[in-house]
Image 1 (cartoon, rainbow, N blue to C red):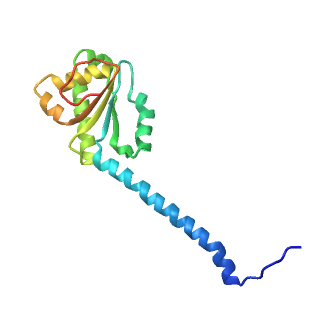
Image 2 (cartoon, rainbow, N blue to C red):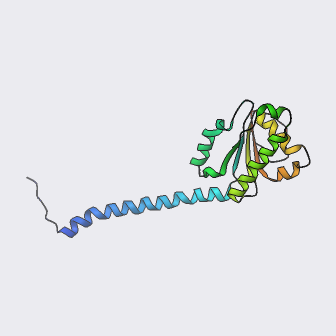
Length: 162
């Protein structure tokens, strides 16, 4: 038979409570530390606008939006332009107006002065024309902090491009 050591009730309660309190304090500290990078990400980053390719839709970027959200972006910081790609080949003014409106909405929602744009395929040509052609090109470039060109045209539109 084993020897049983008799303890007082305060020792039994504290013996169980102290490890739990210590664990809770460590978990709380970790939570606070993890919130700081997420908050910093929103102060040092720009909202993101996705522009799809031919016969596509903004829904094609849904998994990327989830990825950005999991890395600290608020859902309200991510949007897409859902344009009629057959019109983008002809009269681009309607598509340009949609892009203007989407950028203005992101800037207004986030308080940021610029957005990052990710364009794919035909969307890269749409964005190139948007950023380089017409009387509003310089103003439009001023609204774009960074531009990511995925599988599309290779000319520099006058903004930092990846």
